[in-house]
Length: 251
Image 1 (spheres, rainbow, N blue to C red):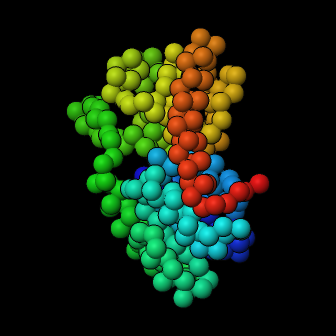
Image 2: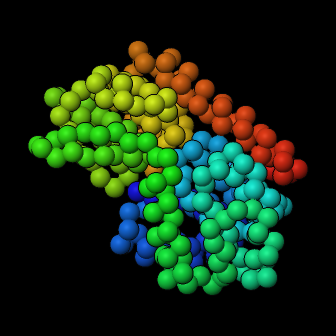
């Protein structure tokens, strides 16, 4: 599952991206988040940048250079694959200031973007991703940590929720949580959530980037709040450096 984020203040350009990416998603597994607000994009990258594979960034952003912003973000996320887009083809030379995998001019051509994303997907599979390996009915399955939204206990089984499917395996949460890293927290006796997919913590639930909510029990609230605060706090510290590097204040 390729996780892609795009940011372009132009509504017209975003409509192009939406269409081309929707067509690509008909044949390939891809999770897409789009932003017109630079501030909202930065906030998302603060929280979910570690689990993002590709960013499509406009060179022309409101009050900020897309090249400088992505250069600063790339310093914190060196495995992030960047695609620059612009209505000015001559900007390709400026884009060389930041390592990127493609520069695509508007209007976008579906075939060109599709070829770039195919290459990005191949790279993402071999770039240090972490996996858990589970067995069911004689079949062994390897699941990318980044593709897991949350895990749910279901009697003697556990359901692994991903953006486009739910997979069921025999076993208990207590067993599988030993295989997981620090981005996962048990927020309820029946749920483990991936904090890299979380955008908001409420008193009784944690909201994910796709709008789903995972229950948080009163017993696990303190532990979940601490884990969430630490996870987001670490990313905010890094992003403060990014904002300083761009010499920009976004209101």
